[in-house]
Length: 479
Image (cartoon, rainbow, N blue to C red; front, top):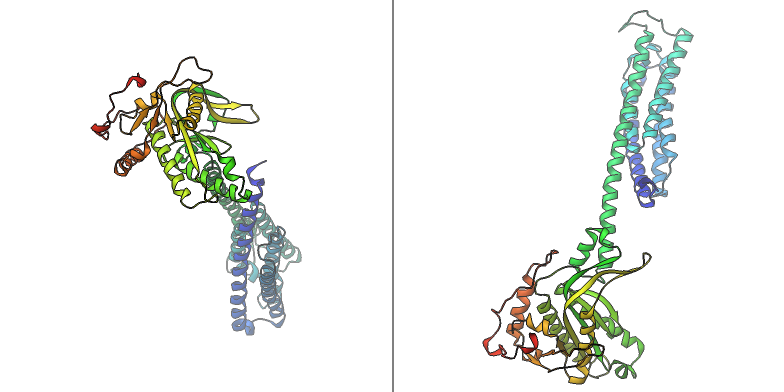
């Protein structure tokens, strides 16, 4: 389908065409009033027969103008494609009645060929361009040429004016070559108007297409913004080719969250209340993930999976994930104060693992999903589950801990066995309650003010915010 056949574009062009028709009608009405005013001052110098034709001509313009005013008032916003052709025909036909009037006047037909009528024809031909239609302009040019050619032919055939073999001026005679040239130049402005109308139409098309494209892009960004952070939305939309099957190796921090004992908490609560809570809960959690440059991978029941470092690489991805986790826990604690589920305390667990994953679009050509897969993802999911056994809220892996530079208080859990893994892990519990608000705010400002480029950047070591009192000597798990 061509761009001009797009429903929205067609509607816009039709509306523009009707606005142009209204402009022409304004000019027609003013022209009729000026003609009426002039007629009241010169009717005494014309013959009664000529005045009758002039009166019919002026009355026709006024009546047609008022008729169109009524049409536009009764049918606002309506499109009538035929109107421009009827309007052009009426205007030029009424103007050509001047030939009949001058034939009955004192000087005869010579008035028609020697007066200002050629200028009026040019005016109507130029105004045809207001319709933004090349066809309408060519129709106006052709019709004016036809009417004037018919008048010239009748004049020559009837012998109403002597025919001069040479060019004459100021005499009661005409030269056929001169008059043919005049007919041509009366019609030519209609062609010029058509070219300008075509160019203007293309400009309107281009402007509206770009405008619609921007609106469509904004809608797409808003929809994608429900799932991805702003940076990731811009990243995806900047190159649609990224939306293809396949993946790449990325060094990331993966986060899993889950609500503890959610089913028992909701047994005595109406489903509408549960849905309302989950919507508010996920809104708060995802907002925090996005704030720190993370990507929402998926919802998993009453939990979620988020990734920091893919598809956009970010500085300090492990630190971002941990600070985001702390803020998520604090946000839930504030929600608990409002007793959203009948007064029961809602707890959550967070597991964070840092390592290499395969990041990309996985699925089929018909439906794909952006996600990360790999041992790091499995480890983060298992670490989150350890919170139940240890009574903790945030557990991180050794690699994540190694990138914190002791800026966040932690406690080692000792060796833990993960099902399906032959080697034990040595994770750490994050003591978020031991983190002073001032230091948390400093960490937030540091992370939120740091640039988040697309290019991969290795994690930046920054121990400036790490208090000496928290620098643990037990780094065995990080090695």
